[in-house]
Image (cartoon, rainbow, N blue to C red; front, side, top):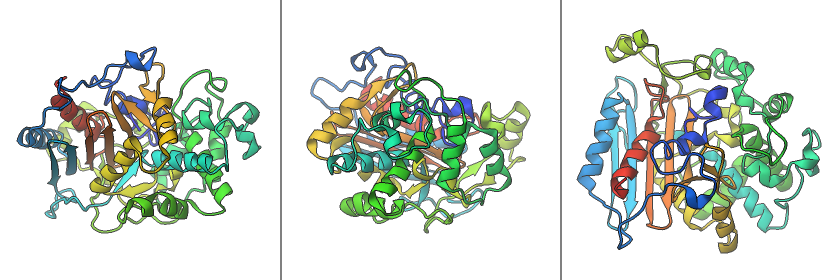
Length: 414
């Protein structure tokens, strides 16, 4: 999710460890959040005008979006900006590389680590129900976790458990390249994570790790006695009217129509140490002599509760407004969730399954072929959602996060 997580989910150590670095570097690098601020109030934040408004110019924002999408040679992209002074909803490009079907707002995409916000919300709802406590040791639910007596549920939510990130392993990345249709059992993912050496003692640091969120998904299933698709549907999608949002069963690699296809030039192993195309390949791609690979139908079970969700731009906007502004938790729990977001050693800010990007709350997600950004600013009632179907882009960057950053900079006068 983030800062550049080609989805931290997907990339190797260097990328996954900077996940909040696209929620934070797409925020931080852009100035929305402080990289290594010692306290929340020290973070650089967008600042609205004296009257509390932001600068909204539909034509300017639309032109910026389309120009960047064209410059990055994105096959398809969508932007939604909602403000008290007006909205824009702009589709760009086509649904398939070299195709002719225009992208629409109704197109479904894989949302990657934005899924983490669903998992975190379910856990917080279970806390409200008295079924689990944030201070509970993970060993209470998963005796197999090493040092689990000293790792709390809260530390799983905030990425401060120290548990190794299974998506940084060569084993996983090679398998994703060789057998993209493989069905992964969540327990396999956990075993890979628990086999790795912890990054630090529980609570002694911050490291974005998908192992945390997969464990939380398994604990939610254990407490509910139901599978995650049913849990998300009952607790999140139905209450918010999210009829085009879904979480697939493990063996389901399909995406409902209409769908925007997702593309990537590199493979997963090659991107473990960096995502930019070598100069010769970049030139070939720009000349149309090198074509990307379609990853639309890759099985997403390797990301499971940390990143396998599917949605549309309008429904991501609805979701992030509830995530950052309230509607799925009690007012008291919502406030505590916002207060949980704390800066983390130059990696942006992260809390109870939510990223902080200046005054925006949300997340960034990336899967092979898909990059998305969703953020809501409760101070100004501004929502920004962007998705793109080339991930990473040719320069190895998260296209949607970069576009979102530029739009926010423009509106807030950064």
